[in-house]
Length: 416
Image 1 (tube, helix red, strand yellow):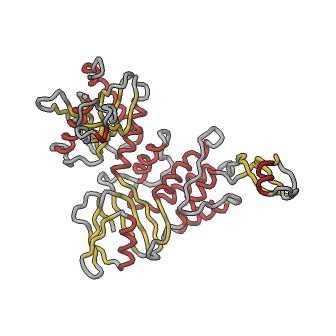
Image 2: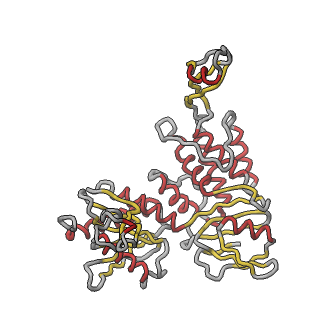
Image 3: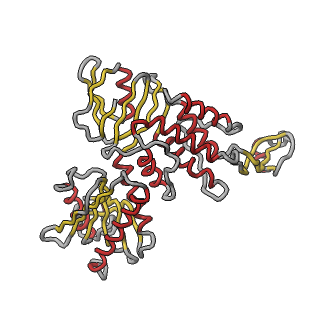
C-alpha cells in the first residue's frame, strides 16, 4: 500500500499486533488502532518504504520524487561531488528493486579492474619476526618470553574499508525480501567476488575511507552504498518480525542539501557561510549567543534561535539569512504567515535586511516587504524534480540574487 507524504486522511490496513508494532518501530508512519485488527496509517514527516512478510508500506514525497532525485539529495549533502548516475529507476514505487539493481550496477563498474587493494597496518603475535618488533607491547604482555613475538607490519590486502562498505551494502540488499530473482542473483555473484573481505556486523559504525586517486573508480558505488547503509536496515524487529526499511526525514534531507549547496554556491564570495548560527532574539547584548556576556543565564536573552544558513562578511557581520523549508506554512506559498514571522525574527535579531525562504516547490520568487521594518523576505522555490544540474543551478541563482540585493544595504560597521 502507498500513501503520499501530505495525505491527511491516511490509509486503513489490517495488521496483526506484531506487524503493527514492527511498522511503528520504523517511524515511517504513525500507526493508530481503529479496531481489533484495523489500523490507520498516517504520514509523519518521513518518506521511504518498509517491507515485511506479505506487506509493503510506502510513503512517497510530496513532489513524487524519483529514486534518483532522492538519492541525489541524500548524497550531495554529504559529498558535493556526488551524482546519482548509477541509479537505474526514476519510479519511486519501485524503490527496493531500483536500489538493489542500482547498487549492483555501481559495484560492477567499480570492480571492472578487480578488487581494490591497499596497505594496512597489522599488529599481532607471531612465532617469527615480520616487519618490526613492538618491544613495549612484548614486554607488557609477555615479560621474559621469547615467543610469540609482538610485531607490526604493513599488509597489502583487499580487506580494506572501501571493500567492507560495499560488501555490507550488498548484504543489506540481499536481506530485503522479494527482491527480483535476477537482481538477487546479480548481488550474490558480486558478494562472492569479495573473498577475503571482512563482513561488517550489523549496528556497528562504518569504517572510514578517504577519497583519493587510487580509489576513484569506487567513489560512485561507495556514495550509494553509504546512503543505503545510513538509512536502510534489514533485520529482525523486537517482536521477531523480519523486516526491511529505508526511511528518511524529508525536512532534514532538504535542510542538509540546501545548506551544502549554498555553501558551495557562495564559496568564492568574500566572507563565510555559517550553518546553524546560534543567536538570541532577546537581550541587551549583540546578536550572537554569548556575546552579551550573559548568554542563556540572562533573563532578557533567553529566546535562542538557530538560523539555518547565514552569510557573514569578512568582518563577521551578517549580510543575508537563508532558511530551508521543505514545506511552507502554506502549501501555496501565498499565506506563509508563520514562516514570515520567523524570518522577521531572524532579521531583527541579526540586523539583516533580507531573508530568503528557500522551499521545495515550483513557481516564481515571491518578494515581500515587511511593514514598518526595513526587512524584505523572498520566498524562493526549488523544483526538486529537475536534473541535479538544474537544481544546483537554481540554488546558485538564489545565492547570486541574495548577494546583489544585500550589497546596497550592507552596513559599514558592526552595530553597537
